[in-house]
Amino acid sequence: MFSAITRCINISVQPMYLEDESDPEQNRYIWAYHVIISNQGLETVQLLTRYWKIVNAAGQVHEVRGDGVIGEQPVLEPGQTFEYTSGTPLSTPSGFMGGSYEMENSNGERFDIEIPSFSLDSPESMGQVH
Image: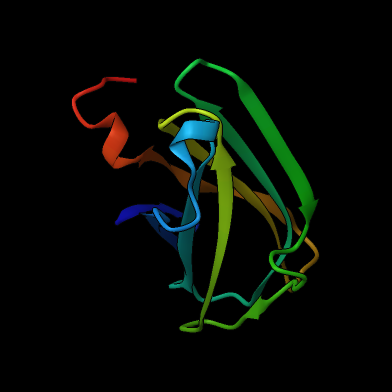
């Protein structure tokens, strides 16, 4: 599990290689990642947007920006947690990704929180360094 805390909001990510959905002969490697967002602070916050930077083993960068996550813009009161699972493909057997969420508190202040960078390693990549 990979974790980062920004302004008392803990982001934890657990990547999982999806061997059944991947096709190494076609250079198609698929991962799911489970995200847990925990509001450990004293203010209510809402997740507005997401930004992901995905880098494969060849150094190719793909950036993703959009509203919310999985079609939602969750509001988290102090002590609340929101979880979701999503996925990403790569054309190489390994890579990494990370990013940020734009949040807004009840005073209308917007700020970014870190999504920790995490590695994407398939069985085909074992022993390789990226």
